[in-house]
Length: 435
Image 1 (tube, one colour):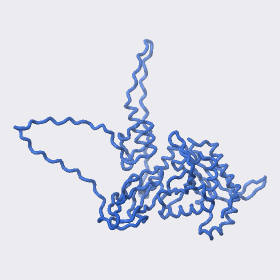
Image 2 (cartoon, rainbow, N blue to C red; image 1 turned 90 degrees about the horizontal axis):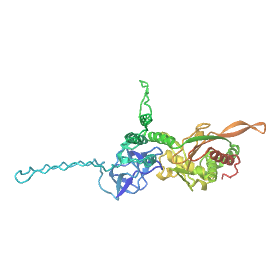
Image 3 (cartoon, helix red, strand yellow; image 1 turned 90 degrees about the vertical axis):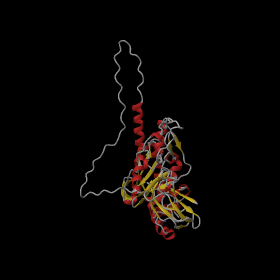
Image 4 (tube, rainbow, N blue to C red; image 1 turned 30 degrees about the vertical axis):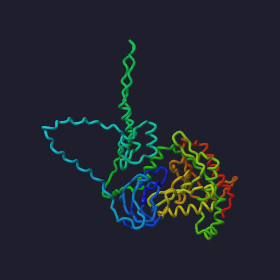
């Protein structure tokens, strides 16, 4: 018997929603055959079967959100057992009715005194890294916090409310006896209540439509807000002359398409330049863990891919080992499989730096949000032919604006601009061969 578990689709992902079963109990499945679909904030994809056999038991129904590594089904080798539906929760057996006691032989025994159970309860639902960190730093017993998130999950707001309760319950310290001529002490100010977002009244009417967010959209919203609360976001923007790159791309575009069946875009050039800069400035490739800096020896570049109903960031592992050709082929492969729901769980994990190409939609510049737990993300604007001043003369150049959003907790503005200058130098003085 093989357990099928909810996979982890990214470092910050602690749960996933099982949106659809592609097989039903009793069906035969082959190893790596699509078994079910899941939705998280980073991926909406099919999950392959970990073994060949018969789907003997389904433990999680469609539409339910469960934590990573939760067993969602079981596969039996061979033909296996007959189909089984999702098992209902076991009913508690009724307590047996005691026989009447014989009064002449048995004296009544006083009922034992009830003792309150003070054992901390386990928290319901998976915990995010931010919640664990807040609980650790403030010495909060998570077993005594009631979660208000999905499925009873403990949120940051739950911990803030718990902290406010603890502060309010703390007795005021005993004051020293006042001197004879001293004025009476002023009463202590009450603790400040936890800050909560004001309620927003949204007008509705006959021309208004209301529909719930998809599971993927809701989790994207949650994690984007989490990133804004976690990192001190700052964006620096640099104008880059892409003329040399544009000429090289134009000269190789037809041959590239004929040889490899894919178009040659600007993105692999920018990715290659970013990799060069990350080698020189490893802090931009790092992460923050409390008061520690985690340096990553690998350079794994996440490439944002727009989907019909969201966004996903598959990862090019070992990007520093690839040239423009290798990067372009990896980008096309990951994007194609992302849109056809063929990505593997490990292909959206382990990113150390991200790039988002909003220029492909015509945007000149943007200020992207950092993909946690990374500390920087590079935004690529569209490449346009622009009149510029060159040695007191007007010339037409291919201009692109690159924006680096960085975590100011770890990266200062000077370092961010030095990194961007290195990227700019690589692109403006491009000399590497493409084929």
